[in-house]
Image 1 (cartoon, rainbow, N blue to C red):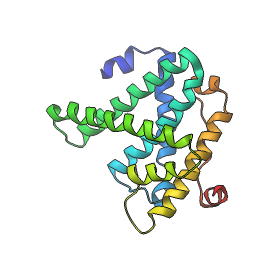
Image 2: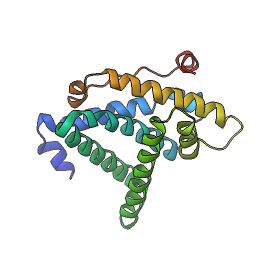
Image 3: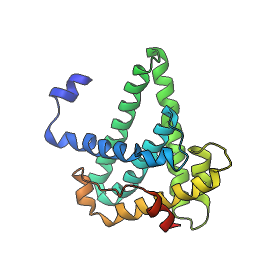
Image 4: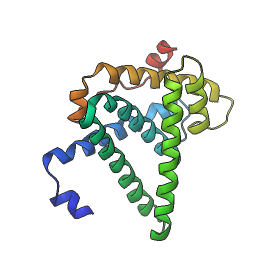
Length: 185
């Protein structure tokens, strides 16, 4: 598998990896963990990567067949990365497949919940983020509101970018910060 990644790819095959790298970089922005209550754990980081991949997949839907194909490749890269991460964490070979299957099922469930919440003007998005990402603390409501505002802002930013750019692996996010998030509320 690794040799195919090194020797068997064309330049076009790099696009999902480049796009995934940009999404992971955004998902690892410290503000999520220091100001928005996302747990700085393997699970918290997975949730943020999954959220950003979901946002990219939503935007790629507008890209026709090319968007669908890149979306599938992006999904594959996400779960190849999760497979490798689990192995690096010491999960045994026999357990990795089961854990990946469980992660994929949870990812699909989250995609459905986030899709439904993003078309709703109410607080469904906050509820989904609280349920899936944020720990139940006294600050969970505030954190969920700030994270939901960020997600809506990120979706608008992605919608404003030409889908052709995203198909080429070019995506730009505004770094979330206290002033931007509070201004979006």
